[in-house]
Amino acid sequence: MQWMTRVKDFFGVQDMTVGRPMNKLIQFSLPLLIGNLAQQLYNTVDSIVVGKYIGDTALAAVGTAGPILNLLLVLLIGVSTGASIIASQYFGAKDREGLSRVVGSTIILTLVSGILMTVVGYFTSPLLIGLVAPPADVAEGAIIYLKIIFIGMLGVAAYNIFAGVLRGIGDSFYPVVYLIIACLLNIVLDVLFVARFGMGVAGVAWATIIAQAISGVLCLIRLVGMKHLIDVNRRTLTPDGPITKRLCLLGLPAGVTQALFSMSAIVVQGLTNSLGTAVIAANVAVMRVDGFAMMPNFTFGTASTTFVGQNIGARRVDRVRAGVKDLIKLALGTAGVLVACILLFGHGLIGLFTDTEDVITIGIHGLRWLSLGYIAFAVSQVLQGAMRGAGETMVPMWISIITTIVIRLPLAYLLAALTRSEAWPKGNPEAIFASLLISWLLGMVMTVITYRRGAWKRRLPEYLRG
View (tube, rainbow, N blue to C red):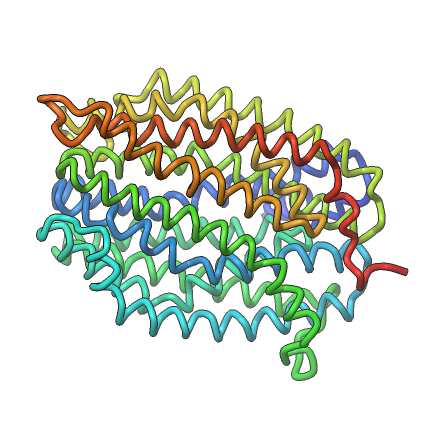
């Protein structure tokens, strides 16, 4: 397995405070991109199996549960983001003791947040599904799916948070290896539970949580085994007050941002549901393709946070600007290729999820609307990631509030009202995608302006000041 050792050495823990920024960013981003794509395979394979083996109603049920699940994942997003930022800064400062306390506090928070979300999510699933008022047959499957996912929430929390810490200290290799293992297992279990055992939507949910739990355990084992960097023992496995407070303060805006995206999606899901099952199913297919198209953007955003965080910790602010410029180039180039692929192969991509021609047609139109937005979103993610790495998490949150609440929601309903016709008495479904595109474009403009103002660069954490 000599090739495996070479790959591990090339993509191992990256100290981004030294060397050429572009080389370091590519080494860090490639496995992270593969991991993000594998993560997206979870939901995509679920949707393909459900759409092909069960039908459009079941596909709509899984899609309806998605935005609600994402809303309740905000706690994990917050903990993961805060832990990643602090870990990257301590790693850059070469502070072993501080980094060990970050890891210990994060493990405790993961346990608490996972249990809390299981209890809250399981018992409120029927109420939450009722908020978006899907058709009765769709609602039944959505509730079943959501309840089972929440049963395995501790495993979901473990992977997302521990992988965030590993990425913060520059390790993007092992999380992707564990995720690929889990993804392959998820595919096998999906087909086994649904096609062989006929478990329906429930089988898809059980396959997902089993695979996620395995990836979470593997990430924890990796963290505990990194004895050359951190100490995980009884002393460090206790909540550290200042670190926990800072972790929450940094992570809260990221959690709020994710909550706003999810709340917006839930409200828009209500509009989507009013347009009929075909539109719901098409929207699910579009969002699955969208998930893959977005993965490079999220990858470069995470790389930006880690790069800036490590260099802020090492007091190498001089490297930040060069690294961000390199990431912008990578992000725009990748987004351009993806947009071209979507425009060329849109019919085949939507056809993976359904054989219904009306659903495919709606889905293709949706992808065309969103294509330009992927380029704008690439810029936003890199620049907002840089702000977060420097400890400025409030600005991205406010941009999200403006784009999702002030702009996107009213615009979606307004455009739907303006496009009512005999064919679409409650509005043309393209209004949903057009409103999302406009919000992305305006979000990019606001992000570029706030980044160029540069106030976020002065946010050096107090505990790193001499």
